[in-house]
Length: 65
Image (tube, rainbow, N blue to C red; front, side, top):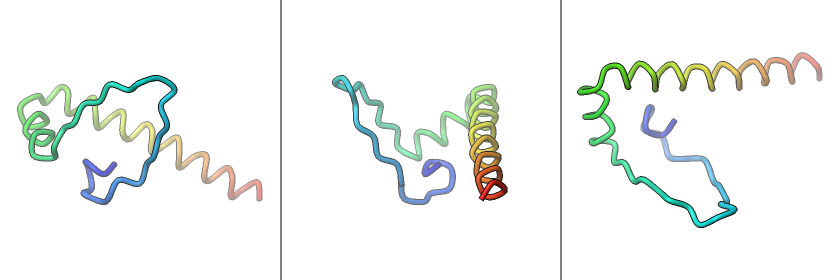
């Protein structure tokens, strides 16, 4: 999310095995999205799907409580 809305990254993770990381600066990320429109659509679709699932869960949690 931080790559999309320029907010600070709020996630933390612990790896079970030594991780392999890819560092992608915002400028490079934006350039890839501009050059690769199919990839951009796939990323946006995936992002929306995850956010929708989280919103549905939050709504269900509030409705149940």
